Length: 281
Image (cartoon, rainbow, N blue to C red; front, side, top):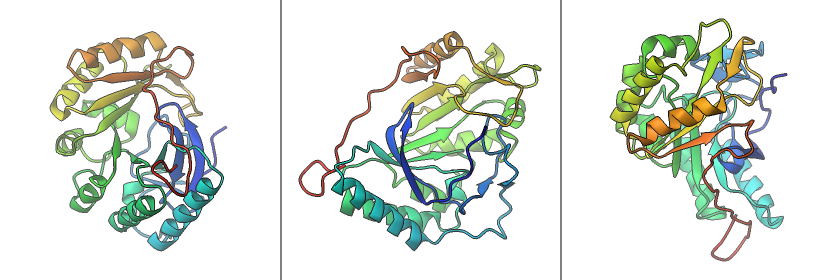
């Protein structure tokens, strides 16, 4: 069963396969998914409350409310000596669609610097808005930028992610947004309609990576319920093969396979919450 959309601005920390103990920040309306993609593997697309972004009729949360929620949660974490590895802007949809995204990021940075200096501020984005000037300015404020790129050719991109800006425009935008981490979900459709693991499709994706030259690539597959019931996780062996091809380009790559205990992963730095002193959160 898919998880329901979040009802809070700040949630977790969530134990992530890739990000450790991540304190999540949701910038989207309470209980509603807002996104400009309909990815086949998205757990929220299958929920009736999911909505494609139209730009109107959405009650966006106020920047001040998000700022206050994060400040309160960080203070509570510090008082409890709670371990948090990073603050992650994610939630149930595409966070950069918030019309006040740049202001929100400025406020989040100020809260982090005041309450938990040194704690990384990260974002998970579908990359569709990376060409917008205000979004790019805001993205540059983050310590870690995890940007989606599930395909390098337009046909696979449309079938897997449901459209959006052209894949060429996304790749061009990501080229100038360094350093970034590319995150790619590899899946197969039992009906043969979707498969971004086959050699030709992987080759186009690798060509896109060569143009972007990300700092790192995260190769992974599904671990949650998906919108498309015919979708299947990519085999662990294939994930490792793809990662090796990325490394062959001189780009570091990590494999995150939810079904293999020995999966490769980057070590996560641990920070313990303190209200004073050099190490906080």
